[in-house]
Length: 275
Ligand SMILES: [Zn+2]
Ligand SMILES: [Zn+2]
Ligand SMILES: [Zn+2]
Picture (cartoon, protein in one colour):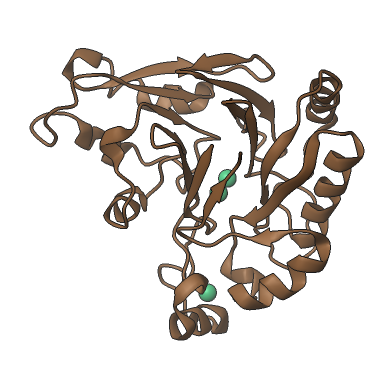
């Protein structure tokens, strides 16, 4: 399984769209891994998690959207779902998109997209509603949506994604996950399943939050508990992502704080290979 992190910022991007704060100024000056687009990840070319306002910029950076077959959403927040650019998959804006793109999301996501994409024959989207804790096949991969602790107005999801015997946990946006998710993970681990790669919410950078979003201390707590219940393989990689400018630390500063906690720090374009 090959994972490419397309974007690693929270809703506003970093530097943020209109921001004059010191953290954004420092990111503009530093460039490189301290410049972050809105969070999304591609897996093995054909699968992608979320499609936000930077999806086109991420395509220009090398993510070939023509290979995409399955688009899996976490929730409907605007940094994760940009319906306007999905409309560009239809003629005359795009040619050669004869196969529908399978889109998987909670009821809110499907409700937003359904009025605009009802005809798959026109290069549209084939929409599929996800239910928490119900495993489904997405192509030759397996997807198991788990409940997040995020916006209470919708069933925000984090995802277990398995392919070729390897497993990824796509773990944002969320605070410390609810006990229903921990219960599922414990039962899953008891069936000898193991995570190889874990992406964790770190919106608050070095900050403390445990609800809605996390920072490094809570992400480290989730890592410890995943290891404790046996849900992570020895040598599993734990990668913090979805950073807000309000966290303050630039990439190298985050790396110095995260490494002692057993966490890696994501950056745009980061490539992770499992297996
Ligand atoms: Zn977000
Ligand atoms: Zn800022
Ligand atoms: Zn969100």
